[in-house]
Length: 115
Image (cartoon, rainbow, N blue to C red; front, side, top):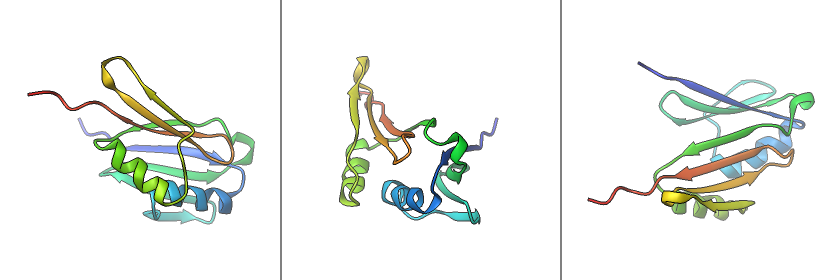
């Protein structure tokens, strides 16, 4: 079974959000129109922002990655610091960033299996 994903985040002000998400995720992969920007996080797995002020501030997204420390370091270099960091039972770690509208975008990492 093939899975493709488009996860959207509504924002109030497109220009402000675009600048913030570029610091979080890097340069967008494409712009479908004047009020959307899309990032391909992995093949066929996308995150996007869209100007929809009436819905802004309610999105919650978590992306699982392999190297959380490297991702956090890169984001810090671009001027954004985590709003919350958690470690769950079993060693799963999660780092959450909150955009200017209150949307939460997190990165999680499952510990590598010991061999």
